Image (tube, rainbow, N blue to C red; front, side, top):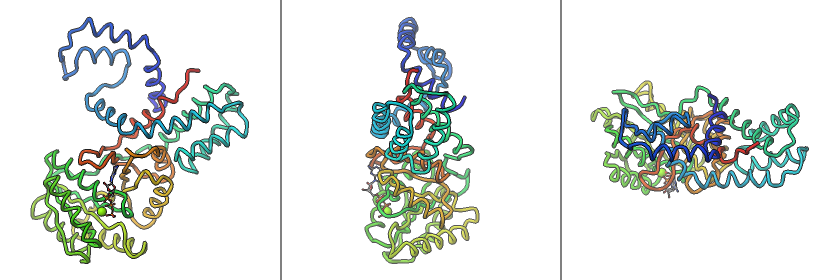
Length: 371
Ligand SMILES: Nc1nc2c(ncn2[C@@H]2O[C@H](COP(=O)(O)OP(=O)(O)OP(=O)(O)O)[C@@H](O)[C@H]2O)c(=O)[nH]1
Ligand SMILES: [Mg+2]
């Protein structure tokens, strides 16, 4: 089943009050004991009616997304709803308004143009005049584009089994590298992995201290050097320590700000060479951290880093405080980089693996219209 079909289904499920009544009625008649696979009869009935895959895990992740990304979704829907509220007729002005609304929702310039262009053709083809039909076509276009661009995308972190995995974190200053490392260290540690951190941002003493504090919170070891020391020396020490300790994961923090961009890129290249020299198939991830609140600026940063570093995935931080969730669509269609983690707050537990399907369903299902 395609992603758009799933959204349609999620939408239908919401509007069909009869279904809800039916579930409630049948729930009353059933004992709520756990039956096979830890699923209750109640849930089985829901599954039967909604025909949706059911897993406890998926459900709880979905709930966190729903909460954490509520703001994003609200603003995204508001922008779209404003657009449709002003809808008079399908003409060139309307298509321009669509472009503007999408750009405003941080869907990205190229992506917005592409969607508006496809919309022009489709509306003609279907001879659509009614606002609800047009609205659903727009959603379908966005979702299909997103789905096609993401084929074969690997959203999971490449963790080696029974071997050391090295993740290098890069990104400009203030985006959330150190915080993300702290949160991820804590998560991996809780999963039973031995984690070591390397404080290779030696540019500021404060940066080293900050990582040490996160190490304490997550109860993992932090390998440090002196302020101003060559970061590659710290990385080397970190790898050595990780090998001695038989660690599962080494997370490497880097500086976001150096004297200038060229220096930063050169330094990152040097760090990467040292890692590959010591562990030939490493780094297993080069994670570019982007601050979602900066919208198009984040897109620019990603393009620059992509040119000089082999970025393997993205961490999108501060999605809790922003309405710029549309950026997820732009990232996929314009950068072709998988979002692997999202930051949903400053706390140690505010990090989530990213499930693109859930995200898109959450973003669009409320926008669907009854035709
Ligand atoms: N609301 C929110 N704040 C975040 C998130 N991630 C990081 N922050 C905050 O963003 C600020 C910068 O985070 P850092 O982790 O220090 O960023 P950095 O990339 O390491 O910065 P430099 O070391 O200067 O390059 C801190 O105040 C964090 O608490 C997030 O997901 N949500
Ligand atoms: Mg930092």
